[in-house]
Amino acid sequence: MRKFSFPLHRVLEWRRTQLETEQHRGRELRAELERLETAARRLLEERETERRRILAAAQTEGRDFAALGGYERGCRSALRDLDRRAQDCLGRITAQNQRLVEARRRVRVLELARERRLEHWRAESSREIEALAAEAWLARWEAYVHRRT
Image (cartoon, one colour):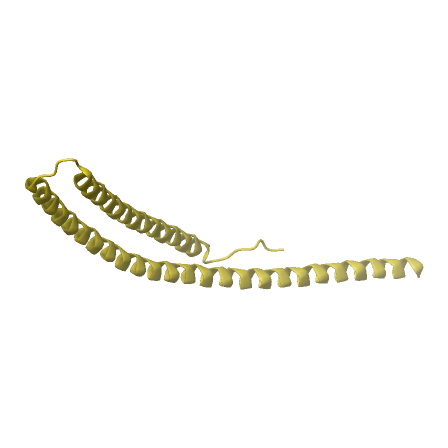
């Protein structure tokens, strides 16, 4: 009986490696998006803390409000930049998800081909075993018949 072999084994392994690479890239992009969102949350919290600090101060002067206005303008600019970068990252995540779906499809196609080949091999092996068993039974039967005659 022959040993099972799948001629596209190396291609399947290569496709699996590609899939893992695409999954890794997707995780990196999601982590980048999370960092951007965290930075935006922190900036909003810092802005609110600074605003409360100035408004709660016992003595507040005009320059404090002017500084707060400048700080808030800087925060808005930084938030716009973070939002732009997050939108860009979302676009890259969408494209990466498409590459990931395609990589999964390529792996699955080869896995299905391997499964079909394995089923065919098993069926062939079963037929070989049945044929050998039948031959063995016939040989024993012939030996039994010859001994009796």
